Length: 322
Image (cartoon, rainbow, N blue to C red; front, side):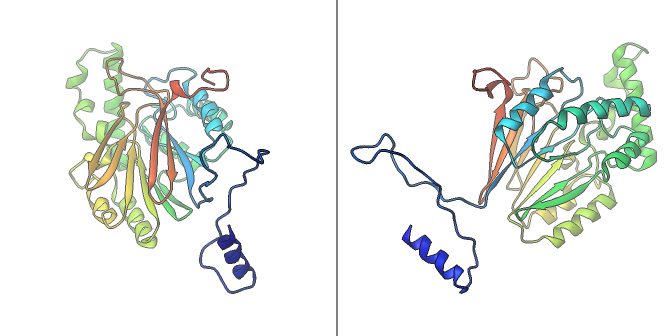
């Protein structure tokens, strides 16, 4: 404590300090003698770390009430901000009124968060050209970046197709859904959509690559870089994949996170953590033990400390889920 006071005095007198002064946590009690019912009074000094949360897929068959519950739980956990990995609405339509209705419903629930929320689009949110235009008018760019406390966040668009290809995918998807619903005859696994790599892996266009390349060049010395996307574009091995960007990312510490699969998994790729999140209300395969609703918390200390909290285990003071 004396050393901290001395350093503070030196800074106050104008001799300069390169680092902010740690703040000693306040601790008070009324036990003046004898043993105390705790092990130590050596508390961790206040650090320049922060915690943010990530939600995963709501859609692909949203289950009612799950996301609203997640919002209540996030408010209790009180992260600095919340990120998403897409599939926020059911989408898949060119009806502007229906899109407005679905986005209004999502935004009404999200507005109850007591901290900032960052949007990111998935295939349900950016299914066709009209939905892409709707997104632009309502939320701005489909891919972007931001820096918080010298940590860089790359928010990617995994539905980044040329206009003609996007229309082809949309028409093939629409036909496949009609096969699944029984509206027309056919076998889903034999449909054109099922065979398209974009269905499961997405794609990254040249303009998006050049954008993030310039961002990484602008911020070469950040503490950490997080790369978020909906579909696992990094699994593509062609020019539409993430390979060229991964070569640039290899020069820095980073973590990659995506959704879309509705089943949690983790792997080490290129010496880095690659996470596929489960769901936060989206459909689940009952036979998949890794298909669960969860909220991911990331505490950004010297390195990120990532904790996945199953929603069923986040309880309020009564022992019930909020």
